[in-house]
Length: 380
Image (tube, rainbow, N blue to C red; front, side, top):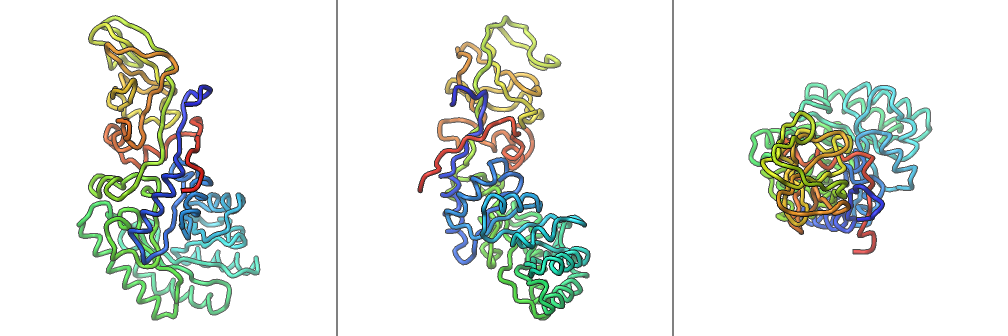
């Protein structure tokens, strides 16, 4: 670790590229979208986008238009879909930047048409169907009307329907009855669109778990989110290694203090941990302001001196403590919170279990006070 850094998130871009290749191999008949929303799930949007493109990702995906426009401003020119819109959003800017935009309702389509007319450009639009997730997407009873309006605008030349899509609710629970039900609704939505005369470039529904386990859901395009970063969508789906994926992020800090204390010594706020006997305490300079979940107080695993330790007491805003017992360490030694697991360190999934959450949240919540350090930037 760089001696100047109290902590860092090391991002292996070689792992990102290898993950893209492994994911493309699992869906050979479809193009791959690398989802880089939320700063690439905490890994850094631009470096990860470039790595994914280099490994053959034909599309990028973002949630907010600001994320998409930032990629364009940084020089990305490939196919790029942005889907989380609210009324009055920067439709014109997105259209002029050649961003594919998503519409789930009539209001969105009307704003897209107005922006396309104002810009003099043809908007590229993906229509999203709600097939059972109950979030964004057009419900079945309004789908034919949305499709007809989109087709009319397409005939006018102000937009081109380039995609039809939806999203699973329970693809991370293999065998869940909603999976097949949603696929049936999506196929019906596709048939309705085809009868209306729409001929999209891509039809897509598969998120990471569906990409990994549901070939029948691959259609023309698959969307790789958490799997792009080498993290499994969940233990029910399988481990990362089962799919040839490697976690790209390693989070570590440098011990800020090491000291001997007597037995009966309270540790951190509330004294929820009291030393059982004379011991050595080490201070890790990372806390919930950096994204370390406070819910992992007393349970979060950390590798120090080649051994797993557990957060002793509460995680504070900037720091937490581990009890080294009879072992020794020195200020400046590494404390590895999670990584690929190669050296025996915990993984993001281990922290997810400790915090009763999902690994997505563990990597995504790592804050901006933690510098991202990129390795593996060469070929391969």
